[in-house]
Image (cartoon, rainbow, N blue to C red; front, side, top):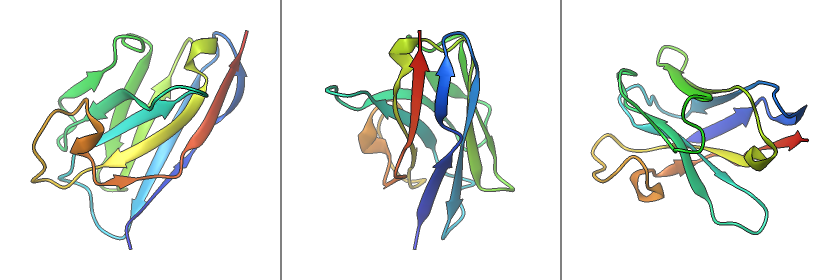
Length: 126
């Protein structure tokens, strides 16, 4: 059974940093696209960042570009989201996602991904 387990969320102050981790189990995702999405209260889930299997190509939402960095360790079947200079508007539940290698479509859309974690809460106070 495939599982994606996020960790690393918490309550921080504006300007602080956090690192989210997403550990995958049940199969290897070393050749899979992986991404992070988030959902704030009363809002739809939105794209945050994604990374190709090789790790060499990454994608970011404009709102986090320059502050967040996505990376992966294929040997550990884990993807990370390094978040710097956090802002109150970054407050949301953050979800890890992974897709099958054969999935077509844009990395920016949730339809690219087949598997989702349960989410981890990030709260940024002002």
